[in-house]
Every structure is written in C-alpha cells, then in structure tokens.
Length: 405
Ligand SMILES: Cc1ncc(COP(=O)(O)O)c(C=O)c1O
Image (cartoon, rainbow, N blue to C red):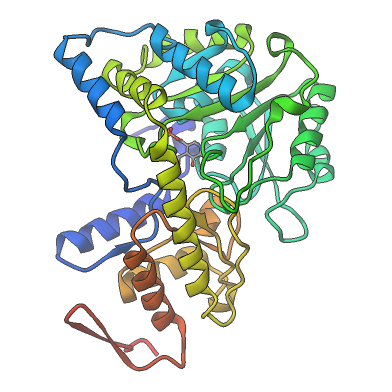
C-alpha cells in the first residue's frame, strides 16, 4: 500500500499501544489500574444533561452553523467576559469539535508550508503531529534548568525568520505547571513585537490549586483583539468532565476566525448539535461542578505527592493545576516507554511515558481517578521498582512474585 508522505510522517502513538495492551489485559480479567487517563471521572453537570435532553426531545437536531450556534456563542462570550475580562463579538468565536479541532483549524488557517511553531517541553502529545498535519515544522524548547518553567530567552532563541506561532499550554499537560505571570507577559509582548501568533491553550485553567489564579494573557496584550494575533483556546472537556461531548472553541481576531470557520465547514461542518446544547447547559447552569472537581483533584494531587515522597530516587515538581503529575523516574532507567511497558506487564498499572511529551526519563501519572486507584497504583509501582520490597504482594486475591530480579 502506498500511503501519502503526510500519513507516513505522522508518528504512531506508543500511548495508544499501551492503552491497547491495557484494554486486552482488562478484557482477560486482569486488575489493571489506569493512571494514564486524560479525563475526569465525574459525571457531566446535570444542567448539561437536562438542557441537551430537552432540546433532543423537542427535535432540535439539525445541522448547526459551522462556527457554532448563536446560543453557544453567547455562552462563550459570557464565559470569556467573566473569566478573561474581555468583551468579544460573535465573529471572534469559533466553536469546534473539541479544543483539539479549534487548534487544528487555527493551524491550518495560519501556517504556510515549512512555517515553524515553537512550544516548550514538556508539551501535549498532539502539538508536534498537529503542526506537521498543517504542513508546519514543530520546534521544541526544552528549559535548560530542568524545570517546567521556560524562560523568555529560550523562547526568543528558538524563534527565527520561519517562526509563525508560539503555543503556550498553562496549566500544562503533562507537568501540571502553571507558567508565571511574568513569563506569560513576556511572551505576549514578544509575540506582539515580532508579529507572531500566540496560541494560549487554556483548557485546564479552571483546574488550579493552592488558591492560585493562572495569568490572563489579555492583561498584557496591548493590541485590540481584532488587530491581535493572540488566540485563546478553551473548551468544556476538562473543567466540566465533558470529554466525550467534543466541544471546544477559539477566540481570535475576526479575520482568522472566519478562515477557521471556512476550513472547519469543509472538514466536519458545525460541531454536533446535541453536544452544543449540552455545553450551553453546562456554561449557563450552576457552576458548582467545576469547584467540586477542582477540590477533588487538589486532594488527589496531595495524595499522589504524598505517596511519591516514599520513593527514593523519584524527583517530582509539585503540580499547580490539571490532573497530571510528571515525576523524574530516571533513577529506574533512562527509557520511559520501556518503564511504562514494564509497569503494565509486572503490576498492571498503566502510566504514560514522558518521551511522548518531549521529556525522556519521566512518566505522566494522572490523578483524575479515585484515591484508591492512586494509592494502590503507586503501591504497586513502588513494589515493582524497589529492590528492597518484599518478594511477594497480593493484588486482590492474586499473589504476585518478583520473578524478574
Ligand atoms: C493541553 C490540551 N489541549 C487540548 C486538548 C484537547 O481537548 P479536547 O478534548 O477538548 O479536544 C487536550 C486533551 O487532552 C489537552 O490536554
């Protein structure tokens, strides 16, 4: 079979391979613990479900406008005003099938072949492949000091005459880091000065801990929205635990928003109508589910950090948001994909290799499950890796013996 150059250039994800292995083990009745997931387990808000059900019942299920239904745009505008303090017009909003599609159509709208897109590591796994799909070249900035906080000098150094855009994702998947206000301000200023697009992937910015508020990029923008190249991406997936509804959006200047809508119109048309009804319900309903989820995740993070402290050799930077933790596991070997595979095989715990996120030797551990999953998962991992651990443990009523030493 002769596949296109593009298809061949897109990397197969080892994450999917691990997920498949885990699914097969589960199907065989193996007690797999999933610390690899990217979605909260809470139910979608009741207001989302009721609003969607009512509209379905009324038969409101036709094609939606390509860039989002009027009510959905109104809800996004209200959200944006409340959380970013910026008044935006319906023409600035493009509602997509997930934040992922919003980013994808934006990249298609702004990139010419070989244009470069700069983003810091660790990064969300999809950025490099999405940039390549849009014909661009991903350029990764790895903070030299080993922290998850890049410096403006490092971003500036990576930007050259081919650079078209910078992507910042804060709170960050996978590190959980929230970038400092000073850094965000510097990047906003730098991109304005250099006429670069700045994509702020803010998907997790309501899920922050320890009383923090993430920096608001508009606070530092000098240009008005319609002359600016700042694009904020958001969505209902993480904050309302509505991943399967596939609703996200971008807020951008009118010219690029129209181009995004045009591209989306030929790709998928408007996002699913029932999902938009649900998103409108969530955005317009009571907002307690976000706080309830945030509090649960903060507690889960504390439990995970507490358990990780018992590992000798594991270094971990405290996540300030999201539901991920990104410990340095190099004490147990340099190859994170091998380590993840080994943990699944030995103790049936699914974790994600850091290599996928641009930093080798680290693992991404999710704490969006239950406290029991976190404590038991880390207990198993510790047992698998600690040479001084007892020779046997029980998983449920199954005895595991360390036969690999
Ligand atoms: C940083 C980041 N951006 C975007 C997305 C995509 O979100 P959605 O599910 O709304 O497409 C994800 C999902 O994991 C993510 O982690």
